[in-house]
Image (cartoon, rainbow, N blue to C red; front, side):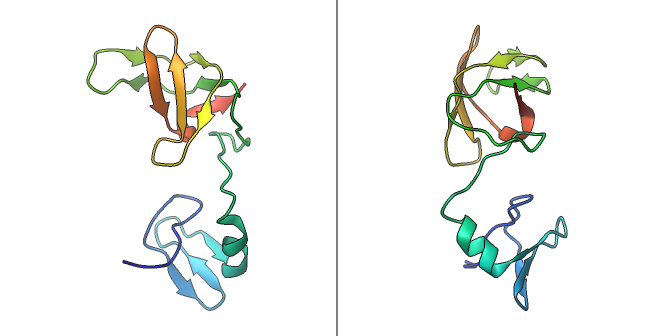
Length: 112
């Protein structure tokens, strides 16, 4: 297993070193080794528009999302209040009215 960090732009695990830079072959993002060491301790979660998210924020869903294992759909424009940021593939723990507790990805929401 590689000890190199995942790409901060797309999350790809196929990064490689090029001198004093890390490079992602999937999205062509380049970042400094020094900068990545500083930001590893504090990962900032951002919405689809690049706004920084925090615990307790209210967000809006920007895409219809099918609920796995159910026939329910979270519609575009659904407001989700009082989010909680977590680590993992799905960055947001929340409770959606009419559906219940869910996990969402930050790429499918925007801050209100």
